[in-house]
Length: 170
Image (cartoon, rainbow, N blue to C red; front, side, top):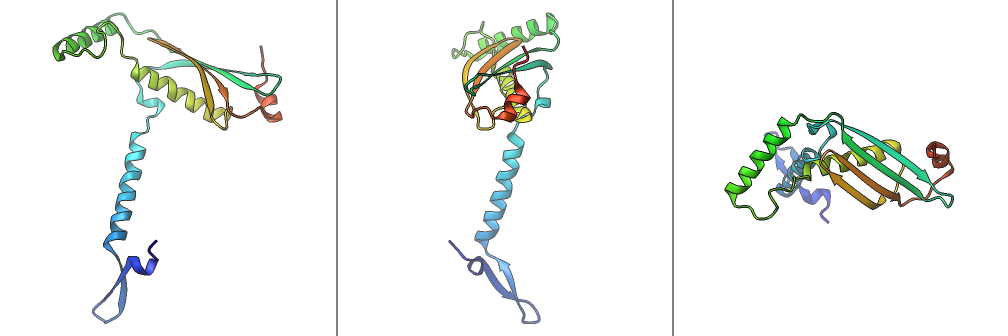
């Protein structure tokens, strides 16, 4: 590892005083770190990045042995009109026919953005509630056009505070 004195070079100014100057290695490192930080921030999606507005529910269940389970359900807040999805689907089919794409069936909807929106919603909900502090194991997932459900089990056990905050209200 380089020490600070090795990363700085010293130049004399017009008064013959030595002034520390950053080495090219230090300058490059600082610039590279700054650029990577900006790229990392730019690539993170937020709930407002998605056009479709949703209604979601987060149901918790704490079992007697301290196992914490949850079910996250999402659906469209309002159903889109029939004309919009149909025309969008027609354009998608035409585009796939033109490109000769054989990767996916032309009758299979593209759920990548919708899945990303559901996953982001679950991540934000868990963070806001503090329910799974140490992550979770996904038990099941159903993603369809207009609705989704993810069930999971928290990696951490229930504390007394969890039991009082998230007790089954069923």
